[in-house]
Image 1 (cartoon, rainbow, N blue to C red):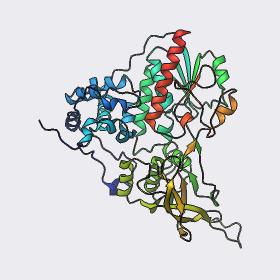
Image 2: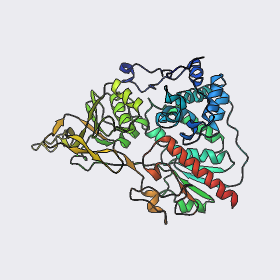
Image 3: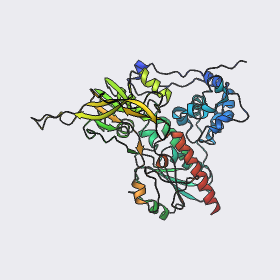
Image 4: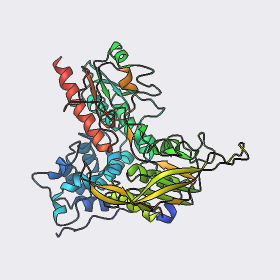
Length: 469
């Protein structure tokens, strides 16, 4: 039978409808479509797709089972190496990882690996009632700092080997960036909760509202009997441009804006936390976080949303799918533009004017691309005399985040680089004996799947260390 040259389309909500709700945009494959897409796999002997997956999912094997409609078997194969299959199927950039290595993609569109993974995980969650089997204890205790993708992966891998694992989370819900950073319309929180519940069934204990470095220190964790510690505390310290006006009312970091919306549910009619709604919004940045912030602002009632990015569409780092969804929803891209100042209202005759200090606009300058920078990307250069002002009420800075310095400042002997990332070796071991780290706490803001890969590497190293002790 001839191979379909194209991926099966992912059904989505109509853009005019979804722009005004927080329901999931991508609706997922049905059974027949998932089987048909899985059947496009060539089952290559050298399995190049696996080399593109940071957690080394056995992709041809799970696709072979999905092709036959054996979805539970496919799920179990994925779960051998991934603790978060329903999450990965939704938010991983498969187009630059596993699917980029797909042999079929040389001539046609690659297999929709992520789309089938999502279906398989959702099928399991909807049809399987048996709890995950808790392994026998091996007598060792490990602490994990942070319940984001790297922490949950490390915890899951160790729990499957019989370790007594306790995860310490600073916020009141487990999931890290999966719950505070990624919007409901891309990753429903019920999906994250289900993945966390599976880890609990494996024996992982999750303690929330505990800030390591403040409530407890890493040294105190060792005093409590833990034999190793994995730090997966993420990169929650927002970056700003240091331009005039960033302290005005109505200026947010994307981190704060998304946390208020996603975790604190500011989208409700009577929210427990305030957030700016409506008006005109400018989001500065071009990554996935910028897309999330812009699309969230739209759903919160903004009449106009701009993405302001200093390079061109070619250099824009967000996933192609997220950019296309944003464009379909009516978000305007101001490419090759850079902010220079945020403007605010001030009534000199009435210091009590309630409008004082609120954003009224943003000055921008047009850019052109010059010579490549140290990363190989052409450096944006301002065009003299091209300044102009856009009328906005809210500005959201989505230009990256850095690791929080709290753990570094409270842990003697823990070395970090100039960006604040914890320095580790190839096994995730830090400069402190028995302290490992991975994910955004090491690299700065990166992808969910790369953080999961780091958690997996560290779990393997911790197991080898404690097994030999």
